[in-house]
Image (cartoon, rainbow, N blue to C red; front, side, top):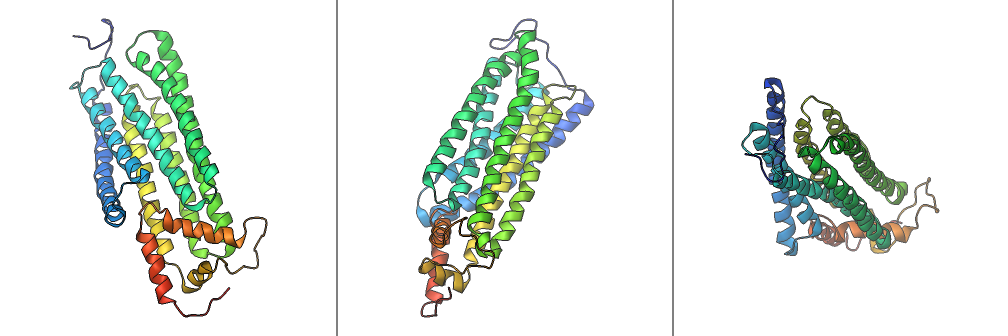
Length: 324
């Protein structure tokens, strides 16, 4: 019996044995990433809540990203096995979870940018600009993808084949652009002043941009497979990989900031830093650097842990002469 809004002439595209083997492997790998993400996210949530007694936007975005990706993978497995029948509600629910996927991962990246940027107006414009842009993409995809999956008409099917690829390219461009802005800030406001320990963060982020972009290319590539639904299984896999990148980035930032050296702490306390030979006054002023560094402690995704480490370093170096 057809589901809600499903035409009577609906033709279900069942996978063959090879395709079913592929999606089983992909779903299994995605489930493994989900379990690993739960452990890491729970650890960060506990660390943060123990110190601040509140849940930040970062923590909320992480859990929404994790839950939505897992739901998409699980329901897609039920659908392709025939357990979940085709219906408007299933396809609409999948789109809703995809909306959470796309918004949360990009807002997590913007939250990471906010740790370094000292310009709150730019961060606010980034948050709302990306939100509105992605929301428009979400609405357009919902209006095309759902009728296409319901096989309402061939026109919807043809438009979806083109637009579905275009919107994924647009989302990949936004992802790369945000990460590119982050590494620009790391280089221009931290590394340029001789804070070489942030070089690890700089090069790691470059590598992760390549990994993240490869996940977007993977999704687009699988859209050309014989079964037009199989690519849905690669969405949770790709976004869970992106989530793991963000979780590890949060921990890496925590480790780097906690490794503050004595001279840097004393210099920051006075609002000055040592100028390397390559110092460029047009990039940022010393007070801007100090303010940017302090923001890493105040607005860390892992909460008060950074502030505590700064206080410890200050006490350890109390009474030592400042080297500027």
